[in-house]
Length: 87
Image (cartoon, rainbow, N blue to C red; front, side, top):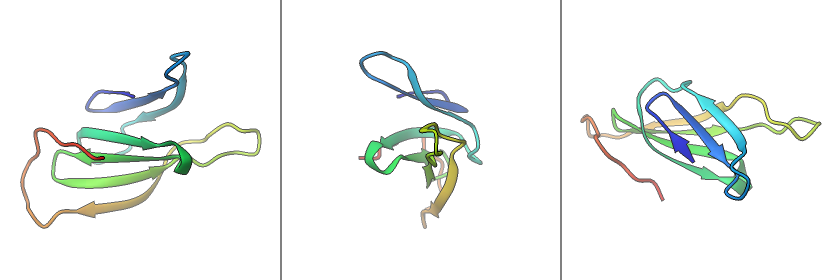
């Protein structure tokens, strides 16, 4: 996975081809992200201390359309994050 604050790509580790591309649909800067292959979900940790879960729907032809926001969960602590990790 490769990401900047506004975009993210999930790459195939053998061929380095892009599996999914996620261009800032989030409302905040992405600090960390984790892709869950079996669920076709992407979990992002954002700078204003919340997480988002995004799903990549599978189309009939095997391709994927744009990510769909499944959940956004805010933390009770209202602080800005400069680093984060979701495992």
